[in-house]
Amino acid sequence: MMQTRGYAALNSKTPLAPYSFERRKVGENDVLIEILYSGVCHSDVHQVRDEWGGAMFPMVPGHEIVGRVAQVGGSVTRFKVGDLAGVGVFVDSCRNCGNCKKGIEQYCDGHLVMTYNSVEKDLKTPTYGGYSNQIVTDENYVLKVSPKLPLEKVAPLLCAGITTYSPLRHWKVSKGQQVAVVGLGGLGHMAVKFAVSMGAEVTVLSTSASKKEDALKLGAHHFVQTTDETAFENIQGKFNLILDAVSAPHDVDAYLNLLALDGTLVLVGLPEKPAPIQPFSLVPRRRSLSGSMIGGIRETQEMLDYCAEKNITSDVEVISMKDINSAYERMLKGDVRYRFVIDMKTL
Ligand code: NAP
Ligand code: ZN
Ligand code: ZN
Image (cartoon, rainbow, N blue to C red):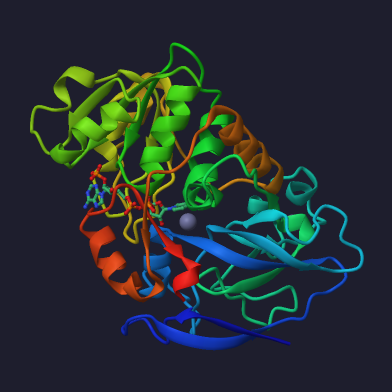
């Protein structure tokens, strides 16, 4: 076993603290990655605080991982020692179901092994995430990372990036389409960059007036402050696609009315409470309400390559490992532009 250092939550009520644990030895198909940067996703907070239920402790969060390959197993063909590498939200899947075979492993009908707060394929051994100095992962679930982009700005692409890229591709966002992004956070700011790069006319719908200037700098064409009572009046029926990346309960129904004929609202945000929906918000314009979860390994690689080609990265604030608990508090207050990333040298 390999002794590993990290930060863990021991239960849902106490702050994260230093924690030592063991990872498996590098197997035939495994890659050992020395972690350089680990992004801080709002899902980390949901899970550490057990807001979705079923949390497993001790929990070492982190699923936006970039680092350098330090060792490879005997059968590994895609990586060699010294390569840059990334790990995202899952580290294995059943590999046999139709969805795995199609390369959309995130929708595995068998057991999807999440990077943390999950168990390995033996259904026993807990998985531990990226708030740690190293990770051992099967090479088939490891991404290639280009040396062209600053690594700390690449880490958030492994979750925030793919989670927004995938639905924009699935719903075929292209030139001339009207796209709205609800919630300008870690996911939202990536959605704006991607949708703009795909040629859409992009509107940010935000509760934070202070983010207007940023939204326009990120490339958005319009900004609507949703706390303004009259905000929705002029944009009824406007959008072909709305990407909802809000982390807290909010009035999803009000946003449905902003969709054009045949428009789709895609939920990527995962608040812990249900949202009431009026049939009248969907029926008269044949609107759809959908959801989307991260992306498969193939599409994640496609997204990373797209980012390297188009010079797209996340806007980040690099923090020390010891500041993780205050970073969570700041993220909950919306005080981050737009992703915290832990510099693992500080562990
Ligand atoms: P984040 O950085 O904290 O951003 C969330 C944004 O939501 C905030 O910046 C804020 O934007 C808005 N918001 C927060 N509280 C709100 C409220 N009470 N009412 C209205 N708007 C509010 O979070 P994130 O990391 O981007 O994650 C967003 C959500 O996506 C989380 O629920 C996370 O678990 C989920 N997620 C899902 C997937 C997936 O596969 N589907 C993957 C990763 C994350 P404004 O200030 O602009 O209003
Ligand atoms: Zn995430
Ligand atoms: Zn499967």
